[in-house]
Image 1 (tube, rainbow, N blue to C red):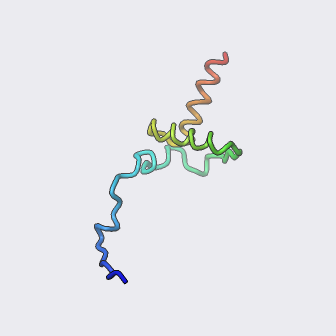
Image 2 (image 1 turned 30 degrees about the horizontal axis):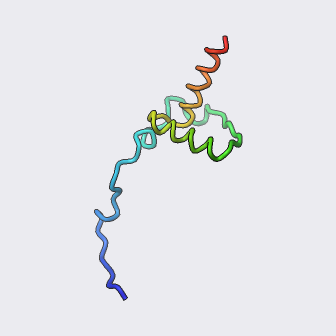
Image 3 (image 1 turned 180 degrees about the vertical axis):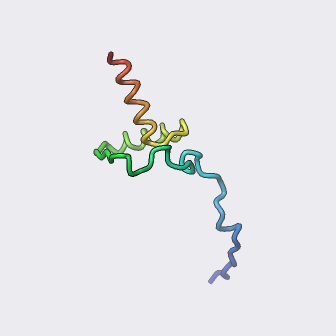
Length: 76
């Protein structure tokens, strides 16, 4: 049986910093002013959408809002 190794606070600290988007505070609008938007998408799309937001340092709702504005602008 292996001997137990004592842990220190440094062992429990994350090795890398979380993405900036994950550490940002919510936007200027309070959550009470926001309305939930729920729908289901295929898992591969969800994974790609989340990765695209992470790559651009955006929150998911920020990426969706940007995409929607570009869509509306292009459809006029």
